[in-house]
Length: 220
Image 1 (cartoon, one colour):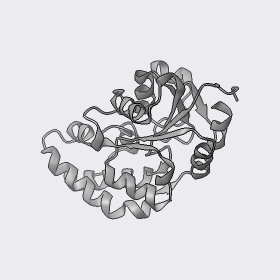
Image 2: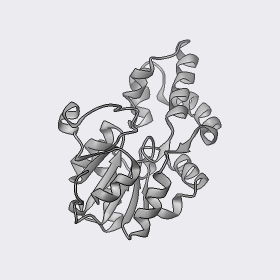
Image 3: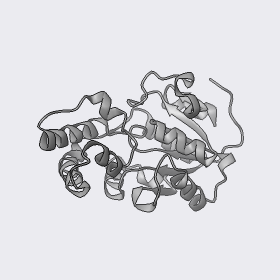
């Protein structure tokens, strides 16, 4: 494990696939949508490549002939009905978040998910209180990989890019961090980038790959 950076005072976390295991509810929501609109299921590998992308963007690619508000309604009806039962915190992430907060770091959550389900997940597992700032898709006009979500979060926190680091699980997270000029960490439990090395990820390569949550404490 690399030695501590030394100048970090702000830690940003992605929500889906990083803090919260929402993989099952997302995949099942997509399969419900494909069954409803296409009469079939989609290859999970195709779906995984869209993880971290705003829902509207993906819908337009998958179902270009269907009004986006209609396809989103199909997806969200299943998603909302099943969200609470199908999510869980990744092992060790709740302890990590609590410890990072205890050590005095600024904490931000940066997600392309909408506000309501983000809060539902955080409140279910008692994590909301740890975050100084929470930025969701409702708070931005541009989304990951554009740097705007991170820039907004840093501004609200009063933090500088050079003193910040972000944990994520998708290319959208890594590129968002890179575009905002902050260090990036890929979590090894990523489903979207499972088994990828820094070399595999090219321009999106993270500064660090986190094998287990508590290893972050050695980095920062």
